[in-house]
Structure formats: structure tokens, C-alpha cells
Image (cartoon, rainbow, N blue to C red; front, side, top):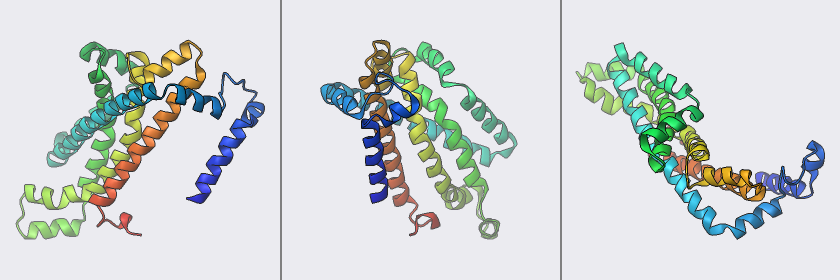
Length: 248
């Protein structure tokens, strides 16, 4: 813990001393100093806090819906494998669509509100959950599966006691991926179509050359993403503490 903190302090110190500006030939308006970013955060504290909460709400809502949909797709694909591959392919194809292409469509469908950004996040988080959960449900121990069959366990019992439990580590891997991806989706959606949020404020700050304020949005987005990730990681330790990956 001490080494990462020390590295962070050294990084900020070098930044404040304009070492990166000299190294990469950057001007202060291109890369504001940490002190200028801090001052912008202090002056716009209430606005930044409000917009961070708004963006985080979009990200969490969209991720929950997207992850739930992805899990249901994985569940159906495992239960009915004949068409399961097709559903996973469709989800992967949707995930390949750039966010900048989804943004105007979702804005047209759901309007300029939280729904459109939540829909963007939903679309961008389904694939990771569907693919990971499907892998977990499919990669069960053959001996455990044979044991369940020897007790004449039906498909619902096999899913409940074996496949779903086996998928949980994969599910939390997907949730950790989606924790950061959801912030990206929400901010990019706000960047193009929004009247609130960190993405909206970042876009406006760049347009009027308020770069310290723009970088404040970037810093807060990173902090929110890390907090979101750590929250998921904490839940992982609670719900799958039986898994070897959680033993220290």
C-alpha cells in the first residue's frame, strides 16, 4: 500500500513541477497543473458533486439492467444450447457497435434524460456478462454433473445447485469489467447528448477552454470508477468467499 501511494505522490510532484510539460512539449492549457485542477474542483465543488452523482446513477442503473439481461441470456443459452450460440453472437455484435453510434439512436428513443444513457450502458455491458456467465455455467466439473445425474436431479436442480454456483466467479469478473465500462458508456453518452453529468460538463469545458474544469471531470470520473470497482470487489469477497480465488 505504501509503494503505490509513494509512486502517486512522486507522479503528482513531477506533474506539478512541469516535468511532463518539458518532456512532451506541452503547454499548461493542454495539461493543467494539479494545483489548477484542484482549484477548479474547489471552486465548482457542488456542481461537480451533483454531476458525478448523476453520471454514477446512469452507470449503476445501466450496468444492473445490462448485467441482468446478460445473465438471463447466458442462462437461456445454457439451457437451450441449439440457439444459445446465436444469442451470444447477437449480443457480441451489439457490443461491437461503437458507443458514438448508439448514442444518437438511444437519445432518439428515450429522449434527453437518464434513460438514454442507461440504455447505452445496458447495451455495452450485456456482452461481458453473457459471455462470462455462459462460460461459468458450461465449464462445470463433469464428475459433479455425473453425480447430480446419478441422483436423478432434473435440469432445474442442476442449474440451481451446480451451474449457477459455478458461474458466480465468472459473474463477478464480468461485473468488475462492467463497473468501469459503464462509466465510459455513461460519460460518452453525456458528451454528445445531455444537459447534465460529467460528460456534458467535460464537453462544455473543452468548448470554452476551461481545461482545469475539464480535467476535474476526468479525475472525478476516474475516482468514481475506482470506487464502483472496489464496491463490486467487496461484494465478490462476501458472496464467493468459498472460492479458491478469495482465499489468502
